Amino acid sequence: MTLHPRVSGGTIAWGEAPLNPTLRDLAAAGFTGCGATAPQLAAAPSGAVAAVLADTGLRLRSVCVPAVYSLERPAGWGRETERAGAALELAASLGAGTAVITTGPAGALEFEAASAACAAAVTPLREWASRLGIRLALEPTNSLRDDLGFVYSLRDTLAVAAACGIRSGGPPAAPEGHPPGGL
Image 1: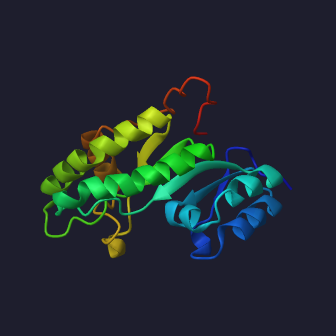
Image 2: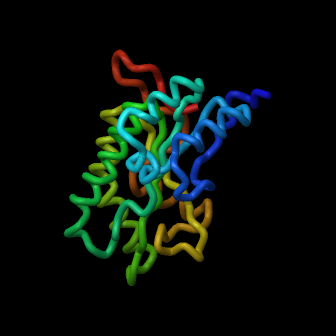
Image 3: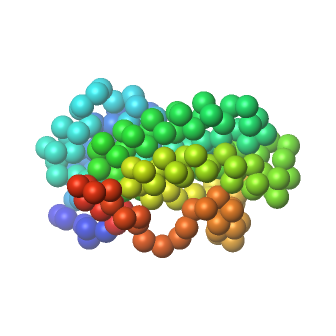
């Protein structure tokens, strides 16, 4: 069975299971596209994910980079951007067209201050993603998981994304010599 080509299977439901068997499970279930988390990609043996993608015909469409920033600690944003940027580099090398991020915890910051902090923190990461031809997307989180983010509704997600310069719409233009990413 093959699913509609725009339907992707996400590996996040497998938790800390090894990524490569999970990718094989998705391919066996009929998926042609998939999304993985940055921690799963980082934990996989170097080169092994690319080999499994090639062997199964799966296309990595997105990578999820959860809780990118600790918003009330700006001194750490540079280090956090480097960590997230490394995930973007790996995702780009595997052909992913989208990186999905969550804001990270707001801590004691009120919504407006957290939104402004997020906008300031995300700017270098957004520019990094753009250089790689990767669309950056902001994901809302469940209010029970405030360790991952502080936006819980579509309205708030769109407002914070706009403040961060993350546009809605189609994928960015692909860098020269690279196929376009996204769906």
